[in-house]
Image (cartoon, rainbow, N blue to C red; front, side, top):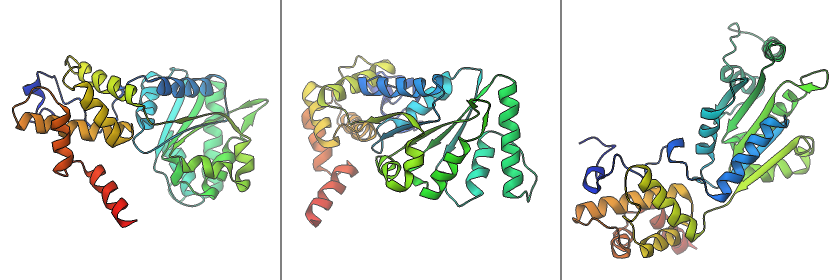
Length: 285
């Protein structure tokens, strides 16, 4: 049996509905996610120097980014940098790699910067806009963020030649709002923070993912959906983890419907790691 199917055949599904990999085909357009995507789209169309999207771990930020990449206008050259770290020069190399700009081995920082500037001017002359997305941007140092801000100073006449989209966890907002980052904050023209889902949205999210793979959406009872929200706080990645394990548990027990009792069994057995970790942290305090 293939890992991607597991219990899927038993429930009459085309594939597992609650995998953890970011997949735009599963994207559930909650009001918050729709608003976040609107901000992303607005940032690009309005030529915003910097757009910032934040949210908790597993809130769906990366899935939104992948949806943007899949649906981006052909007149836009877009580069994605994930988990970039490093000091001066290394970050510039990440940018060049993301945009597929080759530089000679051993090139100096000045030579790399000139290569990037030449590329941006060429794209501008061809009436193409350049957008650079930094995912997990909270990992960047203040010096790294300042280096990125400097890139937005590259311009032709009144037009900026590169737009930045910074995507990261809530601490990214805190860093940008700090006094040292005042110049960067002034360049942020569009921003949005993705909150966790409420109980009703979690239920709709669960049913959406089930229906996406050929289910009815009724494989989870209403009370089971409420319990999922209670123990995940409405974070999509945690919802996926708990629902996936609940379907495995139901499959093992010969049950076609995931009930509150089945979910409670998963929790009681300590099979949902996030809940176990939260309980351990609570005991420690």
